[in-house]
Image (cartoon, rainbow, N blue to C red; front, side, top):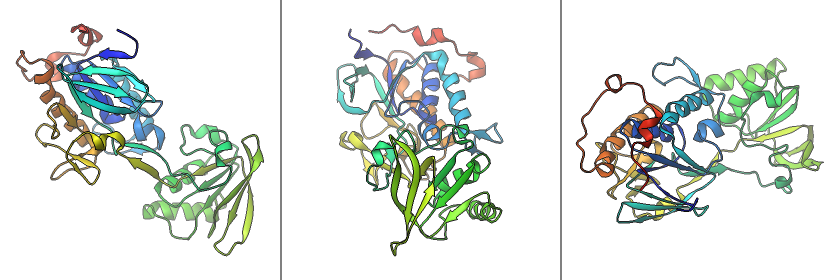
Length: 347
């Protein structure tokens, strides 16, 4: 078998928190998993958009940073030796005698008996501002997410946007930047009222400079290194801001991509599932987390965890058709071990 061809029990599409927990739930039921994600690292939006933002509704944690949650979920999945195919998108799903053949954008083909879609809102990427020459600065001076706050210590930073991400990161980065500007086209911000109040308080104290009403107009610098961000009013009045970094936070462009062509029941870009099993309209394909839809659905990570457990238990009959599933608590099964992932040999 070539390196681009694999056989496993379950393919999990999406390596966010819910997808990572699916690896654990599958492993506890002696099902091997391969995980495919368009991002270059696991963690989904928690890693890509707000790794250092606290989450308050994870049971057992009064507060936990998003990056720490991803780290712990990865460690929880690790004993079951999942195979990750990162930086790839699932392009095609075909039925086979064994179940399904899943083909990715990198040409990887994975044969499996069940599929769990944990793709959040689908493939996503940043909404880029329409600025000439922007590409030359991306990844060098222009970033669409913050991976580490410390990367911006002592720097002159311009944040553009008026939503939660822009305001939250402005508040957080104001603690360590040399100079921090927030550009927005109007005085009203689209964020939690307490965050808006905090932002304006920091502006009043001089920790942040609000550049209102302006919007991005141009960039100046050499070899991808910024020197100034040019902003302009609707009337054409311009201003140059000395800057090392630009962080444009204009939200995400999300799309289902090829998932929309797989013949699943869709409702407003979400996949309709049976709430008892999280199975879609196609037998053997399950959807969990934000992408799943049913009456009473709540888009919470903790609900995605629950849906994952139900989906894995339902998938067990497909992976082990001749074995009865006897429900056991993890306290009865004992601690997970890597051997559980390898008890079934690759066909």
